[in-house]
Structure formats: structure tokens, C-alpha cells
Image 1 (tube, rainbow, N blue to C red):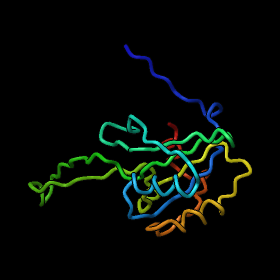
Image 2: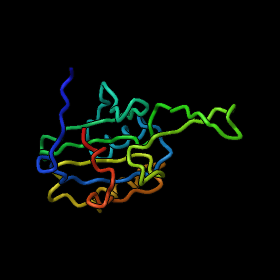
Image 3: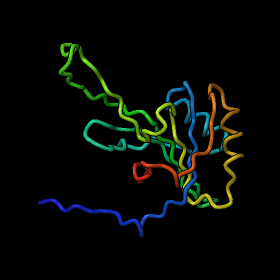
Length: 154
């Protein structure tokens, strides 16, 4: 029998900065530009973040030891597709579902999560991100209003 661990609301500290990024770049290309713009060393995690059986999200992280911050870039769209079975007029057609990490922001391509971000201005980060090539827009997300905030615990 496997043990089940649950994170208490009191234990989880949700003080982080979350920035949504809209871009047509592939994840490795946006990480390259992030490393150039922030003088960072983002590296791909060996394991994807598995939210459920049919959803897996690649992510890149960097520990900024100088400022004591932890940065994570994660895709909002899953790499696995879920086959949906229809019992309607089109039951013989295959339909796929692309799970999202944060379903409230379906149009967002990537999220940049910065932990221990006290004293860090989101406007400065957004300004740097929007100057990167092929980044359409970037903006800070209010984390206290997110319904699926628990999906960002990894």
C-alpha cells in the first residue's frame, strides 16, 4: 500500500512571481534567449512535470545563487495528447485534447515562475522579455486569483 502525502495550505508558501509569455518559439529557443537576456543558465529538467496520466509538461530551471532565487520556465501546453472517445455524430473521428497547466490562461505558451522574488520588479522582467525576438507579449499574472495555483507546485 503506497503512502499518500498531502501538502497543507499552511505549509505551502505561494510567494512567487509568475509571468505569462506568448511566443511562437520552441521551448529550447526561448530558453536560449532567456539565458542571453538574463545572463542565466537555464537547463532542461531530466524529467517532465507530470500533472496527471495524460499530461506532461517540459520545464527548465535555474538557481540564481547570487540573488538567492529559483527560476522555472514551464510550457503551458502538454506534450501528451489525450484521445477522447465521442458517443455522438462523429464517434468514428479521432479527437484529441491538449491539457493545459493553467487552464484559465489557455492562450499562454509559457510561464516564468520566480521564487523568492522579493524586491524584484515584474515590470523590469516583462520589459526584457518583450524585447526578445518572437515574443509577442509578456505580463505578470496575479497568483492569488488563480484557481489552479496548486499546479505550480513542483
